[in-house]
Length: 95
Image 1: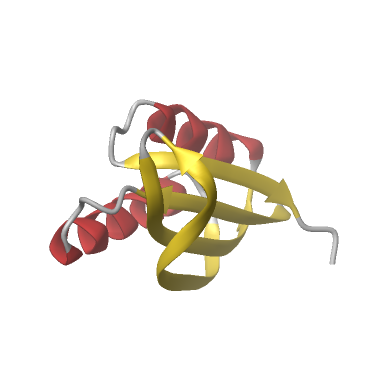
Image 2: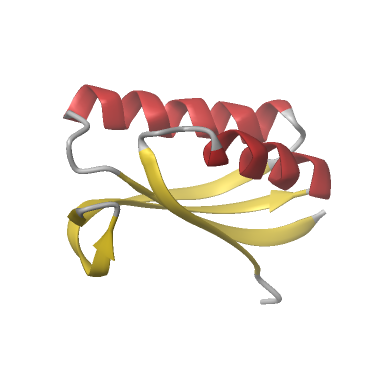
């Protein structure tokens, strides 16, 4: 398994319960597909560097994980069809 940093931004119009449910859902997706979550960093609502889908801010979440390609592929597939997530990025961490 390789180490990954998974960043995603949740739309600002999602309430706190919705943010919590979204974070739990994606953590569960990763663990069900064999990933080990090392740390989840909910950075809160922050201003975006540029406007995305008419939003100027969003809820940032960073997950540090050890995962296989199946777990990251499934996460990527599901996050692309979720209207609450406005942007995501999966980066392999060598360190």
